[in-house]
Image (cartoon, rainbow over all chains, first blue to last red; front, top):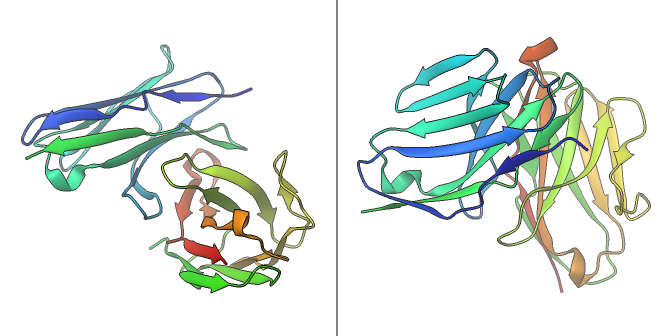
Length: 109
Length: 117
């Protein structure tokens, strides 16, 4: 069974710090990877997608992909209390999306 | 772009009634739509995958006769919870898939909160 694994957290970081969220996936066929943010009581919102090895930056967010290690990460620079949410990692193998259980991030003021 | 809407956002109903939830992709055509359920403080749980014009594929343990899915067009899928009971109270979220090849992406609707009394 294809799996996407994440540490459930909570991950607590002080305001202004870098939050590092990690994700591993089991299926080497997966080619596309996504990070979604889900605030409590709301639905997930796409924040980043990454398809190639290396880094992809968008504002305060940087996604990192290492296909050899089957590892995806999301860095949030200058973390703000408004970044407190659950972050879901997802992998797409061309047919199916597989979501991780999510990591709860808490940014402390 | 890539906006998905759901209606209603919240519904309260009596036990035994049926509730229909609509999911629409507003600015794109969705090859595939998904229905999820999420209980408080728990992970998203995929219920079913639906493709326009064909029968939905249900995940193991999801009763297809209880959760009726109709995907009538490339922009509309509906989920009907038939004979709802209190244990069906949950947050129901749809998503729509768009793009081609490796660029396919899932976008989520805002969700429908169902409370069955």
